[in-house]
Length: 308
Image 1 (cartoon, rainbow, N blue to C red):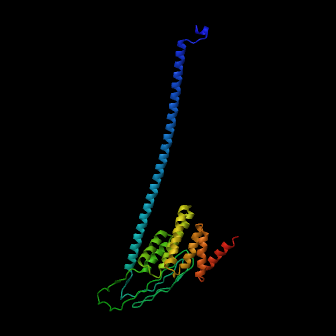
Image 2: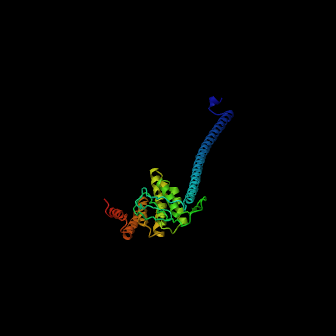
Image 3: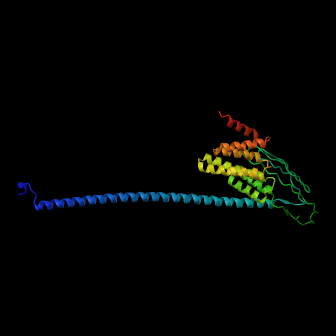
């Protein structure tokens, strides 16, 4: 009847409504499945990011552990240095019945010259040291302390002569730090020079010790540059500038004052601060005209004023 007349019966409407409901349910399920899949993808991405974050945290913790280990090793080396210095102090003993042998102190790798120290029984000779003011890469050897041998009567036959233990000398600490610097152990050397300054802030070599602390940071900056560690380079150079400035601020009469000024300027050039570096070079030329670094400073200033 419906085919003949072209009209829809009630059953046809019900069938269409059912098909529409099924289609709506299918579409809803498809939408739900799509949303679920999207949520799962987002959740997986968040989990992946969380895993990456955990890996970064783990890596950071490992680096912190490594730094802590390095710090522990550094403290151990400092303790070893202190023990070595104390042992050196205990070994410096003077016996009235045993003559001392002449010794000579040389300056390996330094620009300055150190005189020789010769001692005999009952007499002592000082050491003359001419410090270097040049911009060198190795510290000058410290002067040796003059030690006297008290005039005492020889011990009775069959008895051992009493040994006199001398106190720890400033030159011993300075020399130990110098040796570490010469070996490239800059952190340990700087710790030794700081210990020297802590114990003997008014010593004639205090200005030199302060200079070598700055030189240690400057050397570590070069090492970081070779390793491609740009962030560390900036930190080391900034610290070097601070330490070099302490030489002129705390020890203006030190033989290392002009050298510290010149090295500070070099560090400032590396830090991309040419204006400040130029001021330091001009101060060097004006106040230390006879220093070995002054011609180098003039050459730098000329290149700044007349760039090619």
